[in-house]
Image 1: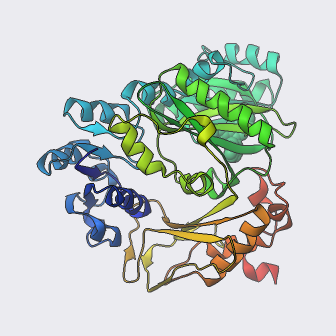
Image 2: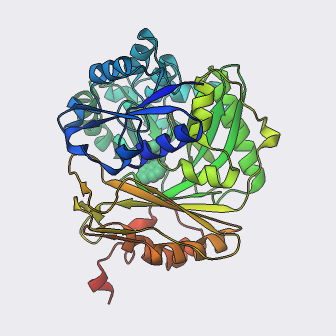
Length: 458
Ligand code: MV4
């Protein structure tokens, strides 16, 4: 195992990775920007290093500064968390060149899944269902129109270098497709430096269901079940749960085994997530693979009892997986609520600023527990330079019904004062019939009522 690990991230995930390192007796170097000087998570580090000014490009994305910090402080490995450099194949390769272990998959696997059409081709070849459409980049608007005529309208144009909903465009007829093709290629070129597009039949509604996999360096791959992530707005997830209310146990086993086999088919190593779209007819299609730890990983940890950061560290240190698929047991139900420094009653506008008080969530019900993955503390001023996630409340209980009751208790006792957060939205969601019965889809948050300001509902 590593003696000392550099954490190339901030906020709740820096704290989360530090906790796992502490439990394993690993020293930590926490790098930070000038905006994050004195941040609450830094007090848990063995050493802190200031990288540079607040903009991420000059701090958390500055590969040179991070590699230099790792070398100067004697780190054997770098944990990238999520976002920032976590899916940057060039950075992963540069770590290797410096003799530092990147805690994640190798650069080739990151690159392969970062190219969304290449990822789709890899998965299709491994027998994973993909949405009807192109398996190669579109050559022209005419090529796109010919494919669209085959699969039928509406269709979706997607950027090969996009992902997470970025660079997508819906086209309802051939006219929209011809205009859309040109505009989408220009946009993709501007946004990603890559104009390549592909096309799929548009699947309306449905649910975002993803599978967590763990792969060691010796070809063993297991899955840790699924997460339901359909409670989202503008591709920002707000609530995630495991297991998905939409999947029967036999669907879960079949899809999970497919996901694990697909990851094994191209030699994937470390933790990864395969995202699927489950259409209303029950057909489930691969969308993308994320080659990092996800924000929502705790719901998987609570239902399986497996510490994913611990697993990532062990795999990166060359240890074989200590489990086979049959060892993985799924227990109870977990729900995560993202606490963002945003005002849900005013279009989720960011509301950074001074946190004056924090009362951690509490649960007092048999068989239920709550976890608060914090990135803030009283007296900390949330900076405006980064994304607005300040922490996550995760409940676990014996069943989904019990988990919702535990969540009501946890979130009613929970307070973050001084700034607006997404907490009021979560409390409304817990009283929503569609959430309670588990029938929601990716459009759920857009329905009138849930997102309406409190005064309009009175
Ligand atoms: C789609 C789709 C419908 N049809 N592809 C959004 C994020 C990215 N992973 C892919 N996404 C979608 N791709 C086809 N052919 C609908 C979405 C989509 C979506 C997917 C998952 C979760 C939330 C979503 C919200 C809007 C659209």
